[in-house]
Image (cartoon, rainbow, N blue to C red; front, side):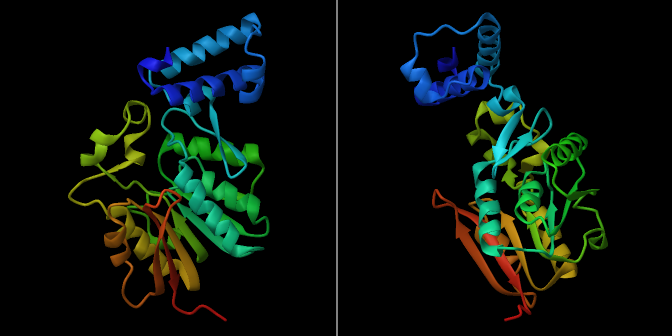
Length: 274
């Protein structure tokens, strides 16, 4: 069923994940006890989920959640599915900041995954998240409640909000839309037909519009010595970093992700205390 849309290895992985979700049997158990027959209700749910996956619906929407830095994040229609790259950046922030107790702001929070993970890792910190899409706001609010984390959720459109709506912050982090519309042709059907385009795509003639706004917000609201973290388009990392050059930051580093792509920018504002 899944082989019509997915390569064999991916189809097998999807099938295994669906079976795990509805039977509790992991991949090892499935291999060891492959001759077992699922109960009627389990089989109905497995077949229904497999049918949805075969139609291209992302597994995370089918199951209703994904895992992100150890947190269960609910996702559904209209909410961008958190990517491994975003989790990688969040893990870097957590690893670098130990017992952080300052203020961190997550711009374009989407499902709330970054803010929730940081709040869980830094229980003494003040964590603020901004978003303007209604479906994402609902999902973020629910995820904050379900995870029991202390995240202040602000309704704000990053492209029009005044910098003063963002608190003075020690860390500002953002994974804004950054995929150019001309890059749509390279994206899988399950992304193009199911995930919210407004959370993914930017015009080809102005692909850095979100980053210009974020740079202005960081200029106004990032404390001396504060750190700006960005997830960026791998093909536009240098151009994005160039927006930050000037008198604001003392260091601007482009960081490669686990696949070797220029995916993240870390910029430290002048004034870090020793």
